[in-house]
Length: 113
Length: 113
Image 1 (cartoon, rainbow over the protein chains, first blue to last red):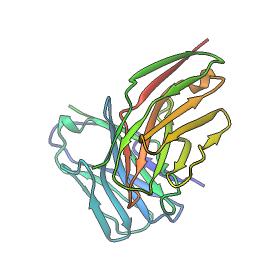
Image 2: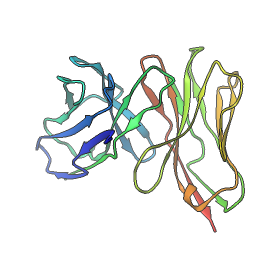
Image 3: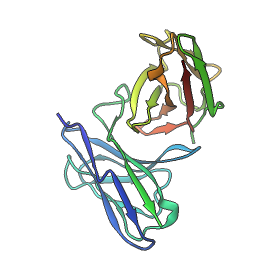
């Protein structure tokens, strides 16, 4: 049982380049989300989805796009990378309501030069 | 918006001793969930313990326990018999309606031999 799988683990981009961070889960969870982790700021919510075809913005959505065409996948797109997007990105899912913890992927370390 | 504050950026403790990590939060909701997550150098996010606000009894998981003070909006984590493997970043998190998690900035805990 893979749980939540994020790819790639590491990525270096030049300013202005685009890329997609992949997140796949095999737990049939409806709720999926993306966080970024920066020193001294904890994890901040970028975008989330409560089911296929439904997405919404979190605390720091600017510069990122998401889509949710299937229950399993929730990709995060950077259309024009900026140095301020250098961070560690986590995908997380929840299987139920508030009494269920988040299941995290192992993170993607992104550096934008 | 809900906020979570961890006032201790770094803590250290001797092996086998007890340490308490502080967390306060701000919310106007009455029913919610609180979590402590551990992030070792591997970057993996690991759930340590969770507390439901409607439960007065403090949660306990082996060597980890919480002191939940709802009126004071405080949720501290006590680690007993500290082990070298407890060295990690610890995040306090608050779950609001809609399964969105708000994280504190984190506390780095170093266990010394």
